[in-house]
Amino acid sequence: MRASPPIATSPAGEPSVPPLRDAAPSQPGPPSSPAPAPRTPAAAPPANPPLADIAPGVAARPATIPSVTVNTAAKPSAEPTEAPRLSIEGLSAFFGSTCAVRNVSVSLPDRFVTAIIGPSGCGKSTMLRCLNRMHETLPLARVEGQVLLDGQDIYGRAVNVTAVRQHVGMVFQRPTPFPTMSIRDNVAAALLTSDKRPSRARTDEIVERALRRTALWDEVKDRLRDSAVGLSGGQQQRLCIARALAIEPEVLLLDEPTASLDPISTQKVEELVYELRRDMTVVIVTHNMQQAARVSDRTAFMLAGELVEVAPTTTLFTTPRDPRTEAYITGRFG
Amino acid sequence: MTTPAKPPMRWSGAYPAATRAGKLRRRQAVNALMAGLVGLAAVLATLPLVIVLLYLLKQGASSLRWHFFTNMPKPVGELGGGMANAIVGTLMLIGIASAIGLPVGIGAGLYLAEHRGSRLANVTRFLADVLNGLPSIVMGIFAWQILVRPIGHFSAWAGGVALAAMMIPQVARTTEEIVRTVPVSLREAALALGYARWRTSLTVVLRTATAGVVTGALVAIARIAGETAPLLFTAFGNQFWSTSLNQPVAALPLQIYTYALSPYDDWHAQAWAGALVLIALILIISLVARVATRGRFATASD
Image 1 (spheres, one colour):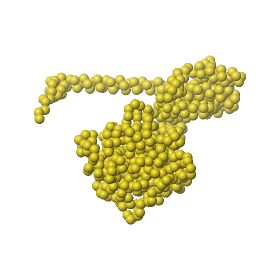
Image 2: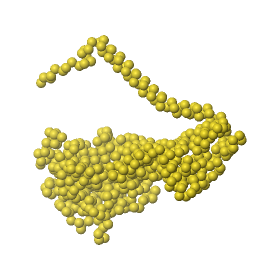
Image 3: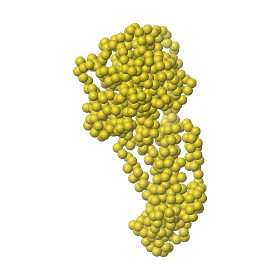
Image 4: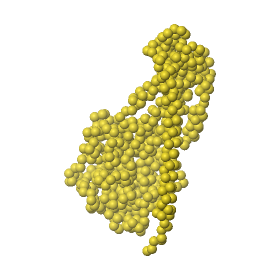
């Protein structure tokens, strides 16, 4: 299924962005199932080696994730050698003359969950919003630098903004179901924008699959025609994640997705995030360091618009290299 | 660790008990007085409407017979005259004005809300406010000058255009105000799904604001349905049956105006009945539009 057009017209036959994959393995497979083959075109060499300059010797993703018991076997255990899905190079973001993100360079490997932590106002949400060009929708907002999605700059000249956002999905802090649409139509909302609108039956399949992935299907299958506003906050947030997943993005950005949820709903969303890493690159901004420790493979610490440190989550939380990181995670400020 | 001594709290002994009770009584009295005044204002605001409705019912209902809706106007002294042509004419004029005024007005309002700070939006907003305050007779003369004089005769669509020109600024401003109440988070959610800006505006923002936009449109329709001045030199009025857009057409406000100025008692009675029908017509349009657009989830953003 190809739900969205490539980002730009490809120069010479080679697709500039790989087509969206068939999401057949949406159900958790047996633990012994092999990891899917890398889809990144080998022809495009990584513009910069993933994270080697920032955190040398990073190898193992955290062996144990506290309090989340989900299947983790299908995960490659080493730092990926393939090109990163997203690499951010010299990214700065401004509101007018105020600089909210200062010259950040970092690579986000495919099928890893990267958490961005930092005190309020440190620019982590702004940086996240730069990754699917949502930053520029705000008044006076401006971006410098490059964000490479599979080697292609999403801020490039020929790039179609709406296509970028179909490849890089986003979920916000507060649930944002469309109040005028039913539960089904909310999930199907993004499908309307694709070039080839799927048939009604196909749409129903996609909706069901997206709702099953977010563990919402059993809760709403009997009231798909009802208003989405009638759902609880946690259900609404999972509905928003399902809505973002329906068009099969390669990257999912989560901007404090559990900040307005109760602990049970939070746990459900965290389990979901943990599941999603099999299929996509996930970036999650969170205030909650325990949450970062629970759900992420890698953690980035930001302070006053700068990226201070990025490392495997266990490394960053146990042996941070930068004293500012240590001060933050031990609670001395922020 | 020593805590600094707290100043004594005012309610716990700074005043003698009698003074405290007196202050409380005074506050309660002021509160009751203000609540009463505001309630009185609310009653006074609805009073004119109630009086008008009662008076209309008293004066108009007596001459409201079935033939009033089916018959044409008859000469003075003949019984059984009606306003069938004026009722149809008013509906035609409302239809023309809405067909032009609602799309333009709602579109303009959406633009004003979505491109809030642009120069075109600021100029448009200012001009819409000026246009809103334009006396309706001026709009009638303007329509006569550009639509009636060059063509050489009065017509229904000249009247419709004049009414549409009155509708547009009002619909634009109310639409803008309603659309601005749609939360930014909804707009962002749609954009983040890869919606183009126009699609976000139409399918998410405007749809969420539907209930309010419809209310604004109804208020505008109700207002132009009763306008007389813009029709004097455009639709002109017609004593005969006509549904041609190219011919002068009767309208309830014009008919009421003519009959009310006449010296005949039975025409006066017909004018009262016409006024009652006009009010009822507006009420029915409002009800139908509300029911039709209510939909299942048309509750505004919550």
